[in-house]
Length: 132
Image (cartoon, rainbow, N blue to C red; front, side):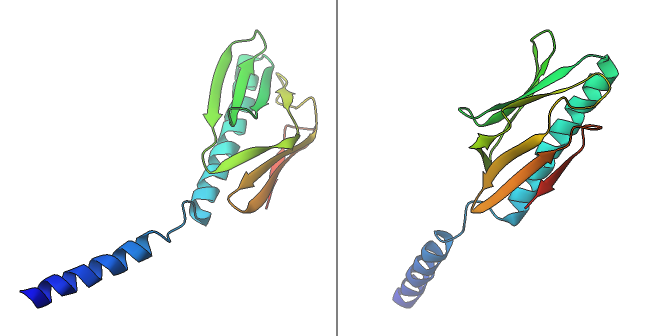
């Protein structure tokens, strides 16, 4: 009985040590976060085209979220960032026109774990790319 208790004690110590070293976010979590951000921007662009009305995209650095707002000022949708954080420099806002084009070009900078990620917007056709 004592041998079994000693064995269980040693196994629990080894598990305790190994579980505490597992990182919070891995590459797959960051990939999923970047996919969600991409879908958020594409959905806002599609909504602007469908409603034939401009939509303002805002980067809320204080609350670490992305906000899509209609031209009349109502919040249409928002995306809370979990695996990434908005950094201070970069685009603060831009607009998807009713045609789907953007009114500005620039970069949204993110810090995802230890990785720096940039979302680069082009002014034509509302296209963007994610650079890692």
